[in-house]
Structure formats: C-alpha cells, structure tokens
Length: 333
Figure 1: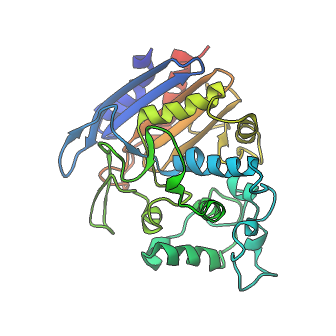
Figure 2 (figure 1 turned 180 degrees about the horizontal axis):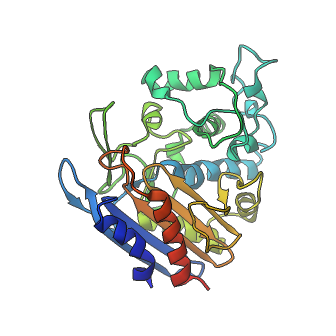
C-alpha cells in the first residue's frame, strides 16, 4: 500500500522535479508506513536521503510548535485567546497606545490569520541582531490589507510565548525527532542562499527566522519523519493533546482556518479525497502534514523542493494533492 501512496512522489523524484522525498503515514491505532527516495543533497556533495534525515519543516513549525504552545498556555490560564496580544506584550506599539491597531489584535486573530498584517516582510534586511529585530517587529506600524496568511502573525505569537514563559521557544519540550536547529543528526539540504553565501544544511532556510535567532514563531523547527508521525499520531489517538486543544485545532475560526491550521477546502494542498474533518499545513521548503480525523489517518510529505534553488517550478502543489488522494486510496476506509 505504501508503494501505491508513494507513487506520485517517486515519479517527481525520478523526473528530477525534486531531489528527494519522504512519505510517512500513521493511523490512530499506531500503524505506520514510511518510504523515501532520492537525494538529501545534490550540492556541494551528493548525499542519499534516508529515513533518519532531519528536514527543515519551515511553516509546519507554526502548527507543531507555536500553535501547540499558545493553546497550552491558554489551557493553563496564562492567556485568553480572545484578549489582545498586549496582555503578553504590553510594549507592542508602545508609542501609540490609544491609536495603534496592532494593540487590538488578539491571540485568536493571529492564530487564524484573521488580521490585516502583510504576508511576509524582509525583516532580515534591517539587521541581524535578534533582539533589535524583535523590537522592530513590535514597534513597526504595519501596512494594512485584507486578511492573508501572514508570517508576522506567528512572529508576534512567538514573542508572546517568550514573554509569558521567560524562555526561548527552543526550550519547549517537543518530543523525539523534533528540535530547533541545528538538528542532532543528518540534515537535508535546502537552498544555496545568495544572502548567506552557502547551501543551507542544518541551518534554518527562512531568512527572517535565521536573523531572528533560529527559533521564532513562524519557522525554525526541524523534524524527522518519525518525529512528525509521532506528533500526528498523538493528535489522532488523543495522547498528544487535551480535548480542549483538539477542539481548537478542529473548529473553524473563519473560512478555511482553525486555530493555526487549514481545514479542507476546494483545491487545497491535501487533495480532494480526504474527509471534511481534515486539517493540514504546509512549509515553504517542501514539507507538509495532514490529519484526517474521520478516517483516523495522517500523512506527512517531506521534500527538499527548494534545493538547490527556490527559483524553479517543481509542481509541489499538484504533488501534494496527488499524494493526499493516493494516501486515501491506499490506506483510507
């Protein structure tokens, strides 16, 4: 069955569209299957991909790490999701305490990307001192626009976690196979970065995450396929999350979004065959995780589609959709 589910990814590797891919599948009763193919790196030295390699999870960090942290702190009574971020970050836009719109953003607004904040900003171009860049994020008057998926939302949430716990996000217990970089094992290469002048391997690919110290709220987490499956399996069987956390990540906050996650919608990356009770998230480096609660089935597709460059068409959207449909066809019930 795993060969059938892995067929789209294997075809993408064999055609040269992506260097390597790993597919992991887990069920609510603990059964799992893993298949990988291709290369962990093409340059500067070729390296074959194995199940033990650590992937830069990119924005999958938002759900595995930051969303879990925020919802856990809410359950502990240390924050209220519907209260402003200023409860945790009182100095947010501190020079305009009565007029700044940023001071009215709530934790839930940011989790659901229901804000006016821009999708992304080249924060790394303003310097490389993490503390100074955090101050820049907090004091900047952000340009307004319609609600979009925004890294800025989760950078703010990461700062809130740091303020409430007094510790960096990298201190949060995440379980085996999940860690902020550098990972404690062989790493998959991502991009040959023009700014940093080297192939990123074991260092976070996202420029803003790197400049912010490697463990901000929007990216920075590394994971093995086993580590991601352990996390997903814990959500499926209830051992890895409380009922309140599960309700938050499964309940729509606005169209197509829960707290942190996407819900299934027409044309999404998870494919068409999954049930309406499926949530998922993708990462820019070529990663993704989807959890179908109705079927008791989760899958992660981990690729290095930005290696050695992001500036080429890899067909990652269609690959993800084909993989989701193939997983359901092979393992669904």
